[in-house]
Amino acid sequence: MSNWHARMQRTEHLAACLANLGHTCFILNPYLGRQFPSVYFRDKIHRISSLARGLTEVHVRLPREPVYYHRLLTRQENHILVTALEKILCSLRGQSVVQIVSLPTWFRIAAELKAKYRFPIIYDCHDLLEGFRDVHATVKNAERELLETCDLLVFSSEYLQQFKLRQSPNMMERSVVLRNAADPLHFSPSLEEKTPRRRSLSQSRLIGYVGSLDDWFDVDSVERSATSHPNWRFQLLGRIECSNVRRLQRLSNIEFFGEVPYADLPQFLIQFDVALIPFIKNDLTLSASPIKLYEYFSCGIPVVSTRLPEVERFADMCYLADDPVEFVSQLDRAAMEVDAGLRLRRRQVALKETWCSRAKELRDLAVSLCPPVQANCP
Image (cartoon, rainbow, N blue to C red):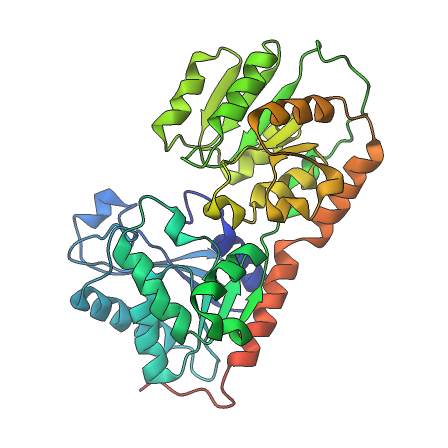
């Protein structure tokens, strides 16, 4: 659902951990070659590249490069992709193959490979597609068929699972919840312990946010927070994808850093006095399992968040708000936190809620789907 080279998200983390567990993973890059413009217009060949041991990226060339969430693929495009993937997957003779689909755009391809070779399909449903303004209706509608026909449904949150069960009650026995997580070791070089010390609210703080700045971002809560604390600095790390967010650019104490590479996140997070998850409440955000929560926890940072179901699981370690006024109040409380034990508890949570543990769960689920004798490719 995303470009490996743009953002490290759920699919990328799980694939990397599965590869570390000794499995062979092929990632179909949804841009299918568009990220190499100087190459794309010169040749017609498919390309594969090694990202790490056991982890390979696949770019399949199509006559017309699709915007993968704006439309479904044509019959010709599906055929080109199936043919290219067959050549790769059928080189794995004697090995079991499981297909993990993270966007309905690719469902027809997976269905054809399943029909030919009995490769089971796991639908990793980690977002509420109905909640995105830029996902085309045809892609959203295709999800219904994917929900009905996949071998296993994996949801990133209970709210998302229950939302989909109301649409398709018969899928309960085929569904599980596999939440998002973090890689706490990625942040370990930055974990020099900050000694919590009591400071007045008039003293400066650094408040941070990591993630998309889209239409679900609660501009009102952040604006009220920044205007209430003009001597505090607010750092927003992420690409602006909604014009309403640009309202915040008029405030001198809010800094925008754009998209920050995953490798650079630790050096930012360790500087935060408080980290934010300011979301407008709707079905999309209520369905979310925020990766940033576990990454903040990896550094022990106090977290102020909109009251979301997945964050409420850790209500005793977070500061939850239902509106912009309460958000500011909870931010004040978080900024005054001096309990070193809370920082330790957050890190302990992150050490349990890891991508490695999630990948092992996913691996065990995948193994249970594999037929006793894997069909051979011709």
